[in-house]
Amino acid sequence: MVDSTEKEIEVAVFDLNKTFYIKSSKDEFFKFISTKKPHKAAYYVQMLYYKALLKMHQIRQTEFKENFFNYLDNLPPEKVKEYAKEFWEKEYPDNFNQEIKGRLDKLKMQGVQVFCATGGLEIYVEPLFELYKIDGFFGTKTNYTDNTYLVEGKACKAEEKIARLEQHFKGQKYRIVEAYSDDKEEILDEADKAWLVKKGKIVPYKKDK
Image 1 (cartoon, one colour):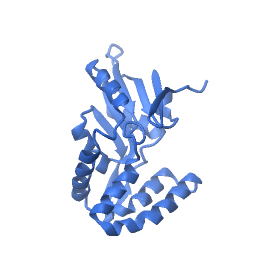
Image 2 (cartoon, one colour):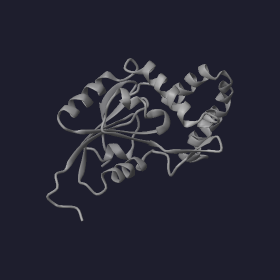
Image 3 (cartoon, rainbow, N blue to C red):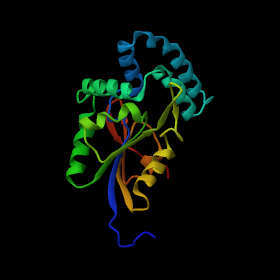
Image 4 (cartoon, rainbow, N blue to C red):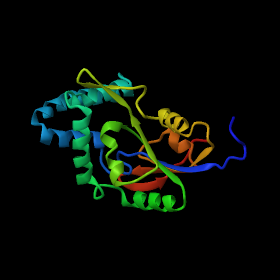
């Protein structure tokens, strides 16, 4: 049972791609891997195919993730993390939205817990937060099975982001005081203050009545 006198935890949540990170990490990480393993560039056409299927709503997000990231096949987790560390060291902080960073830094100083909720694979996103410290992050979980990455559970998109927050706080009372994303999604509807990021510009998000 949750204690009714328990202090409510204030939380800020941000999306990663085209929000805090001004580019798409899934695309940029592919380009980076291709410089390390040139033969991986051959996956580009396949990736365009799965992007098209997703856009036409022919496959689910989870299926898209598994197929889009086929270029990581035969790269064990330790190697992916090693490459990811190098990738983020190259990208951070120059390719990050400095206005959002400033707002998040201010919230952290005020005692607000800061979280990232992204559809990106946790295996390559995690090293970023060794450079920019936050209270936690949620991404799409994977298992490395038979030399390929399979999504564990659901891709961390839409309502799954809320579910992951609920799992993290395990019944503790929390409130999303601010949220940032480049797309309309549930996490924005749940926040006291919500912001859409369009071409690097932060605009107030208008909730549907």
